[in-house]
Amino acid sequence: MPSASRNRLLYAALIFFAIGFAATVTMFAVPALDDGTRAPALVYLLTLGLPIGFVLALVFALRSGRRHR
Image 1 (cartoon, rainbow, N blue to C red):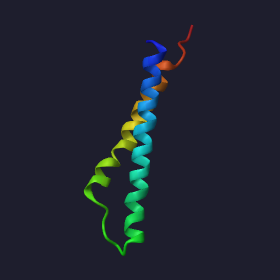
Image 2 (cartoon, rainbow, N blue to C red):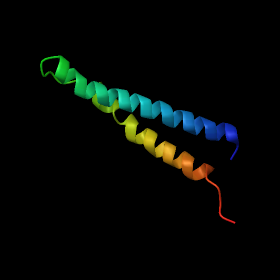
Image 3 (cartoon, helix red, strand yellow):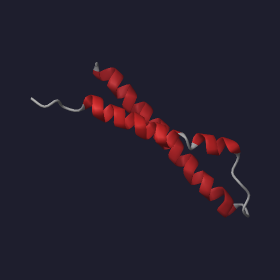
């Protein structure tokens, strides 16, 4: 696998993870700061980026690992 496509996988994983993390923080911060109102449904959908980014990073780590001799 060429290194350029491996780097894209890592960047995609980081972007998904960052979006999911920010959405998770927002999901807990909105009710705390806005008198108990719930966050919009889009925030709950964006939290799915956290596990997707984690799985992509795991795939990247497994594909770029060294083989035993």
